[in-house]
Amino acid sequence: MIPFLDLKAQYYQIKPEIDAAVARVIGSGHFVLGPEVTAFEGRFAGYCRTAHCRAVNTGTSALHLALLTAGVGPGDEVITVSMTFVATTAAIIYSGAKPVFVDVDPVTWTMDPGLIEAAITPRTKAILPVHLHGLMADMDPIMAIARRHGLVVIEDAAQAHGAEYRGRRAGSIGDLGCFSFYPGKNLGAFGEGGAVVTHRPEFAHRVSLLRDWGQEAKYDHAIPGYNYRMDEIQSAILNVKLDYIETWTEARRSAAEQYNALLSELPFARPQPPGHARHVYHVYAVRLEERDHALSLLRDAGIGAGIHYPVPVHLQRAYAELGYRAGDLPVTEMLANDFLSLPIYPELLPEQAAEVVATLRNAAMLRPSEAVGARAEHPQSVMTWSHNRRAS
Image 1 (cartoon, rainbow, N blue to C red):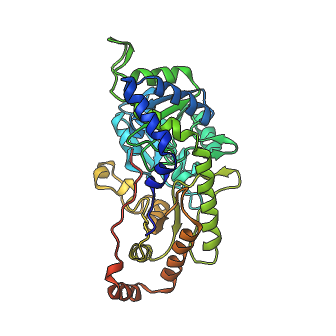
Image 2 (image 1 turned 90 degrees about the vertical axis):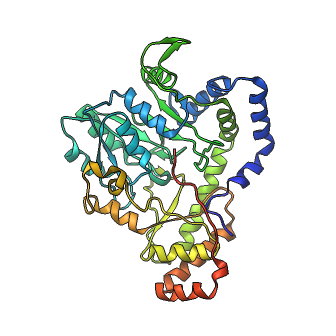
Image 3 (image 1 turned 180 degrees about the vertical axis):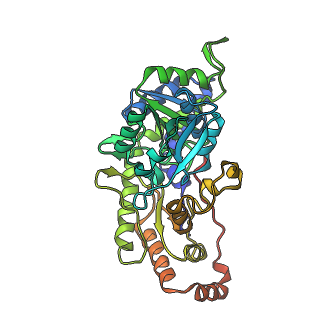
C-alpha cells in the first residue's frame, strides 16, 4: 500500500525531539501563548522573510483575523477564487463581507489577474489570492491592481509554506499572509494551528489583540476579540519541525521531478510552474480524462489518491445564496472535473512513485468498462484509504 500521506513516517524520523519538546511544555505548566509560541513566531517570521508573525489556533482564524485587521466588514466585497478549500470563503463571510469569485488561469491554476479589475466595484475592499497546491499566484500584477485601486491584499498561503515568487516567500508580498498548520500541511502541527505574517507592526498588533479577547493586558480589553490563541504544545512541535522544513521541501520537489519525468509520455496535463516560481508541492495534481476511472484503479491497487477539490466553492450547497451557477467559472469547473492528486510527501520512495505512474499508465490504456471488469475479478484489492484534506 502507498498512502496518500504518511505522517507516521515523519514522526518516527524526529520522534526523540518531538517527545522531548512536548514533555518540556507539559513540565513547564505553561500551555497557551507562552515562550514556545513567542519563539515560533520569531522563527516563522524569519522563514517567511517578514517582520512579524502572530500564531493562532487555525488557518481559518488566521484568514478571519487578517480580514478584520485589514478593515474588511459588513457591506464590503473581497475578490477571491473558488478553486480552494471552503475556509477561504468562510472567513470572508465571518467578517461580514461578500466573496466575489474570479476564475483561475488554466496553466497555473491560480487566480487569473486579468479578470480582477472587471470584478472591482465601489464595495471592493480586498483581494485574496490563494496559492494553490504549493504554487504561488501571480503576485506582481495582483499587487499592481490592488495599489491602483487602494485595495488590501491578503495571501492565502495555507498550502504554500516556503513557496517563492521571484525570490520572495509566500506571505511576504501582500499586506498580510495567512498559513495553516493542519497536520497534513508541509509544516504541520499535531492538531490545529495557523499564523498571520505581515511587515506592518500595526497589523501585527491588531492581530495580537483580536486573537486574545482584545486584551492589551490581562483583563484590559481594548477591543472586542476572539479566543484564537495557539497552544504551547503545537508551537513546540512546530519549532522542531521548522528545523527540517527545507529538507522536506526539497524532498517533495525531487519527488515531483520524478513524477514529471515518468508522466512525460502520458496524456496527462501536469503542473507547469513558471520559471520564477518555487513550487513546494503540497499537492501534486494531474489533469486527465476519465479521472474517476483512474482514481478507482489507484485505490484498487492500494494507492492513496484524492481530489482537491471535486466541487468548487461556488457550486457548494452551503454557498448557494451567493448566486453562482454552473458555467460561471469555466476553468475552475474544468479543473474540478479533471484534477487527480497523487501521493507526495518527503518520505515517498522512488519505487513508490514509479508504481503510482505505472498504475496511471494502465488507467490511460484501459477503457472504463474494461477497468470495471478487471476490478470485479480482484475484489480483494480494494483498499480502505484516507487522505488529509485542506482543512484549517
